[in-house]
Image 1: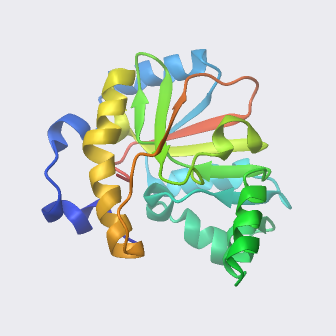
Image 2: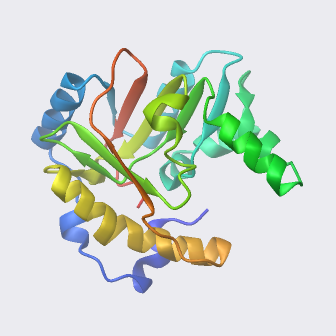
Length: 218
């Protein structure tokens, strides 16, 4: 697992602008506007509480998939999904055990329709009640708009910014710089903001946003 601290010396970014913990008023504003746009929002104090929230949200025997997320790694979800005591159908282990590239990619596409798909975002626009996320291949965000039965987004309050414009700035000027370093270290290739997704509203109870009062992810 690579965290932000691994790449601090390799990036030239504005930490004060894009990685400060939001105030209580800013969190309250974000929650109010996210909920007005149809998102189910939970605010928790710690990574441990975030993991417990997820455990209580996903029923037994549900199929579970995730997009890559440093945040999910930091709160302990990936370890729990792969090795924990649960009765979910964990799809990542099955997918990554497939040796054939074509078959594995086919199963990855199918997995976007999991009962529960988990991931994070690069920015939370508090005034707009919107989420901004991006990916190189689209595998991380492909399930968000429609494919998955339910979506759980976990994000630290350090990703809360004023509006969509600032959320996109955070993506391009901050999160990407760290992700690019991680991609080179882990995969030997550069990343890119190839596919960008603006999650403006949701209907029903499909998408839960868990806001953690910690600095998490990129």
